[in-house]
Every structure is written in structure tokens, then in C-alpha cells.
Image (cartoon, rainbow, N blue to C red):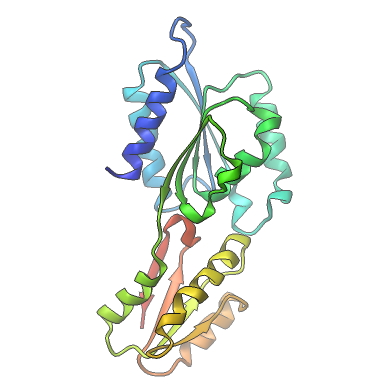
Length: 237
């Protein structure tokens, strides 16, 4: 069963568990981590949105918001989003929150006492290492994914067996810094076969200049946004 289907089922079960005597629609907040148009989340959130409205036993009043600044900001810098949610939800009682990606899940866990302390939360498309078990409550459901980082290297070597050098072109946002360290650990077992280079401290222009000078049999791993949510833009030689 895909994680998308599990999110949908969890959402329907959560809404169905509420009292059904009221004729009011169920209010659902869909909170994106990086904006609603980021691939692959745009596909999953779109499918989830349509299926939830179609299959829910109750009418759905759907609200959406995005932590677009999560690409480069700390949670402490989410003041505008906090104020927006405060004004949006001040007169409305939420029945369900669904997050897409780790930053949105962490945001809700951190600030939920201010807005929705008892509202059920479904965390979708979040990597297992990004979930804090201590922060989970009885109202939380994590539909997580597991990213096997060594597989990235194994796949490069399987497709390009002559590879002797791999450059990691990953940025320096808070989320990306975490995954750079995870990739450093995952790379250690392969150092007897491949040398590794890290571009996380370089600007995009400097990355391009460095890539142009890579030695033969090099591969470049480029992360589209954050590995924690499975976005991989491509591997090139």
C-alpha cells in the first residue's frame, strides 16, 4: 500500500470518527512544506485533495497554506505564516490537519498549542529520521517514508560502473545541512572505490564552475529540494 493511500485512509478514518450529527462540513487544513507546486508533492497533494473530498462521509471545507520559506529559513523565522494561520483559524475549529513534508510536520508540532492543541494531525511524506517520537501525541499519525541513502550511491555505480568520483550538489538550508551529514555517513563504506566531493558551501554559480572541471568518470548528484521528502532532480555525468 502506497503512503498516499495510507494518508487518505487515515484522513477518512479520522473524520469518520468525529460525531456526525452536525450538518457543518469538516474543516481540514492541508499544510505544504515548500509551496503547493513543488514536485512530487504537488501530485500527491492534488490526488489526496480530490480523493478526500470524493470519499469523505462528510462535506469538506478545505484550507491550504504553505511554508515556502522553509527552503531557507529556520522555524523561528516563520512569523508571517504564524500570523496568517492565526487570522485564518481564529473563528474556525479545525477537524483535521494534514502536512506534506517534514518542515510542515515540525511546524505544526511546535506551534499546535497556539492554534489547534487537540486537532488530529496526519504527517504525510515525512522521512522517518525527521519525526520526533517524543513530540507525537495520541492525536498524531505519521505516514512516513524511509530513504535508504546508500542506495543512491549503489544505483550510480550500477548505472555508471566506471564512476570513480561523485559530487554531491546539495544546498545549505537547515534541512539540507542535516541530510549532508547523513550522506557523509552513508558514503563512508564506498570510499575504497569512489572519492566524494561536497558542494553544500558553494553558490549555484560556483557549483557550475566546479562541475565543469570535474575529472573523467565523475557523477553529480543534485537534490531538487530536500532529500527528506524524496525529491531527487537527477544524476548526471
